[in-house]
Length: 305
Ligand SMILES: NC(=O)c1ccc[n+]([C@@H]2O[C@H](COP(=O)([O-])OP(=O)(O)OC[C@H]3O[C@@H](n4cnc5c(N)ncnc54)[C@H](OP(=O)(O)O)[C@@H]3O)[C@@H](O)[C@H]2O)c1
Image (cartoon, rainbow, N blue to C red; front, side, top):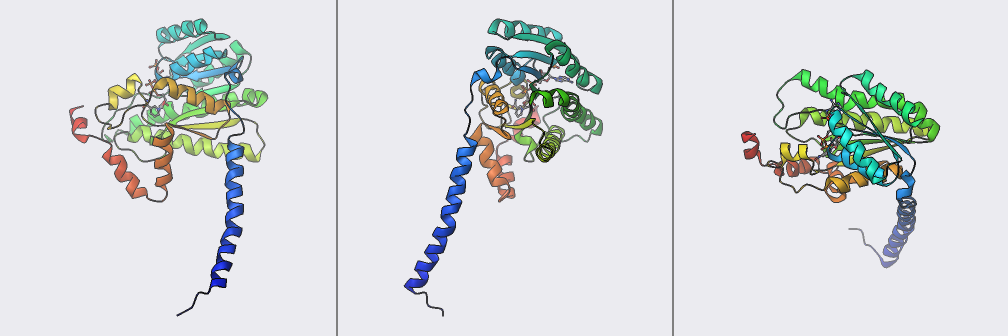
């Protein structure tokens, strides 16, 4: 048996200290670097912003926050009457300007048209907030490939089309792309298979594009927002009886997304604890996380849907 002597122990501790101190230094430097800038509402004053899916839910709330901050806002969704009300409220809240374009993101020509309208109406673009989602079901995957294709078009391809059209303006302004995603775009969730697929696709596309921007020194930030359960009307209607979690408020969620975009953060987690912690577990104990996810559903109630 090998004997460990006091000098051996001392030497081991010394080595540990030697490696621990630089490591702690790196952690502190990282914390300092990450917290280098604080959010100020003035950051959005006079900025030209597109918000998609802004007729209701989180998108609508983002439009109101931006209005209070004095941005120029272009909102889009399908329902013109709802958008008209959002525009009126934005103007009352202090928006530098507020306009709308209505149409469906199922049509890539419409996605490109929205960006063109931003150029015509606002003379450029500082922030592109991609937030809309097409209607899907909350139940077991029904095998409908056509629905997956349609949802990919609305939730993913239109995001790509808008990004491509907006890039020249965003490069000119050193602007930002904000992509609203979900925990269902990071971890496999049951009952939202087509939706989840579209959100994973967003991560693949935009995280890869961010790498290319970095290599090519393109000064356009990409912020991917990983959201948990939020109390929008559509989410509550679809999942409130089945998901055993209390939803977070859409108003606060909308503000956190805007802050993350303005600070050019890589990713936003909202709410932080209920999204970031499961993601830390994901890579080390994937099956345990899968189990925890499944435990969060009342499947009995799903059958009544
Ligand atoms: N709420 C949650 O629990 C939750 C959780 C995680 C992530 N998220 C993400 O947060 C974002 C907003 O969610 P939300 O709950 O606020 O959604 P929502 O209330 O259902 O709003 C969806 C928006 O998209 C628009 N839209 C629907 N179909 C469209 C189409 N074909 N073309 C263009 N626009 C269309 C809707 O307006 P029209 O019907 O007028 O077109 C509406 O403005 C989404 O990206 C979602 O994935 C939400």
